[in-house]
Length: 171
Image (cartoon, rainbow, N blue to C red):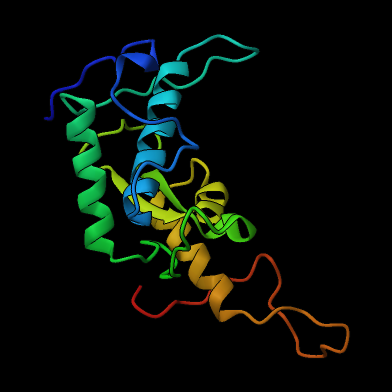
């Protein structure tokens, strides 16, 4: 298992730009920097007692540079596409389409920020998925894709809620 450590409670201890600062002419690098800073902030705030206790989230990376390199490798591997939806990401500079910005998702939401448990998804996909099981979420996303929306002139019959779910392609 990867080395797990608690991240310092002070983000200024890390050699990373702020989450909103573009530091490179490469949009993908800027997105990677933003995602790592956001993850570190999430880790920093984990376990705090508010009204409820937040999940403890840890980093499985030995350094912020190792974390950044891993996320950069994911970004390069996924070639600008959301792992769950297949939608193309937009650059962080595109403020009008923030829902399509890259977002770092923990595949197992109960797991940590560590190699093998991270994927890049569209921001809105990460929000929709929340802490859902990754495979169940992919099934739901597939159901949304294959089911046309209702319209005011829709007359086709829809299955009842207690009907078995249709088998999706590839399942």
